[in-house]
Length: 393
Image (cartoon, rainbow, N blue to C red):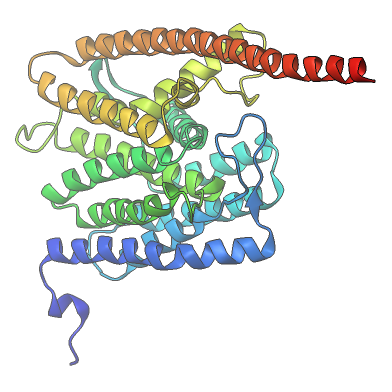
């Protein structure tokens, strides 16, 4: 018998580390090729009024994220896949092709939602991956089967679109997804769920490689809908499975979190809060919730003179800080109390966004005032020279 990869490197922790590194390298090596091909073929995202970039930029970074994650994962056979990950890959491939087509031809929201529901139903119904218990939040524990299916599919579609919505500045969607996938991946690894740990950390590795170019000023690429749909889908699988495992092992206090639903929400707090805030404001102002604008928190930070790097890292810090705070607070507060804390944070998020929006208007007024003064100052010498010319004649 010839040796296999598994027999040469039997330690599963090292196997997963190698997979994550391979995923990162695939992105680092393939993205420059994608950038060159996109430039030759004119596959670029041209800036519009609400864009945060000024020059045409390739949008197919999601192709490299997809390839890196799947290739890195497929190197090993961990033996604990079950039926779940087969269904996950079916849904991921479906969303990959949806994203590619949308990046090329800009599909209607209705068509995208229908395909997202199909991909979500494959994994929710096909592998029985459901949010079936809320651990006593507001007195709710077990959720009936049909209701849990509908709730989980809604959560999938909402999170897929939430990651799509926060993909508006360099590094934000990729960085938040990298933090979330690393957090979930480490928990799966510590608790010996190796296949899910490998998937999560391969996604994190791919995103690290992608972010190197997403933040670049000279060789930039966007993940496009191809990337945001895939990462939203996989992160949601990880979040729901995290909750699901904690329900299964609820009696084992050393490995389970009774506050699993709350922790999952807090890890994903930026895409969740931003989607709620933007949709609420658009509806209150009589606009379609799907109409694009610059009301997102990341746009407000940019318009308040933060750079893309500063805005993204500010929101990274909020995610990590609140996750750490919730993790330590879970020992002292019930899930219902932690949910009230999350509602308080949501109010703070709304108020912060409103303050930034008011400040943005003041900055624009100042800039317009300075522009008018400059125009007036430059116009006066022209008038003087014109009057002198007339006098001389």
